[in-house]
Length: 145
Image (cartoon, rainbow, N blue to C red):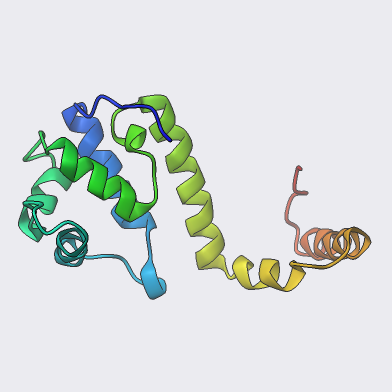
């Protein structure tokens, strides 16, 4: 169980953080719209007061004080800790992880990784060696572990 988090987020950081979630979360290869997220939040919590327009206002910094219930619902929806919205260090770590996942998803690396799942360690080393040689041949720098 996660510790209680003070949900009073700093206004500028909140807009940027929420927008990052919208930009990096890609269901079926596309980005969520404000209206879609609002509809999903309301479906999960019918008493929650939220609209696409309100989410847009938060994302652009025009509104800055969403309820703790809304922040909790957004965190749950996007699969992040509520601390993401209020703790700059946690937000930075999460944003880096989300960006890396988004890059992997966009670059087609995911399909290669899925093919490697379940292979024995010696096979993974062989695959890594082949990829290292291909990177070298393409003039790309070596990858650090």
